[in-house]
Image (cartoon, rainbow, N blue to C red):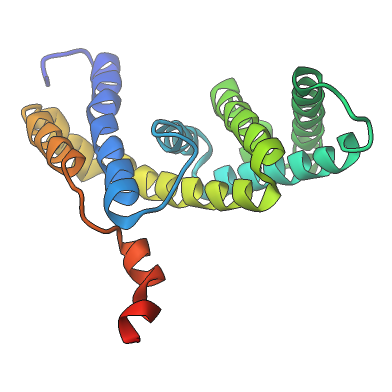
Length: 206
């Protein structure tokens, strides 16, 4: 891999660590039992965090979620059809993000005001999932899924952004086969998840 041009190495290095991110998602969902917005959403969020850095990515995500909840509170009174309601909500949040970028620029917070288009698109995609679940299952359930997604995405970001991990995956691409084997092994796991053991701990005491 080292014979490739530097810019191609950067792309390959990023692609090589995505399976590790998927391994993190699989462990948290199949073994630990933390639910997320889909399988690949935490990885997309982790990739967005690579652009924004973790703290500012969490700030942006929290802002988007708060604006979504506020928009829902307003739209509940309008009794709109599903697609129109979702479109209005996304437009409202996008407008809020634009205002946030403008305010951040005026305040000299370049970390937010210089955010590229990619992380914003990812946040809006996650917002769509959040809004759909919020309308179907309620705000509490959507917030729990958001928390699970943030936890898994943060761990995935840490794994995927560690330089030594990236270097190992670049130097030893055959490690993907080991990751693939672990994914298959975890896919055959049928035992209780850790969250289920915690949930049923009171029954064991009786």
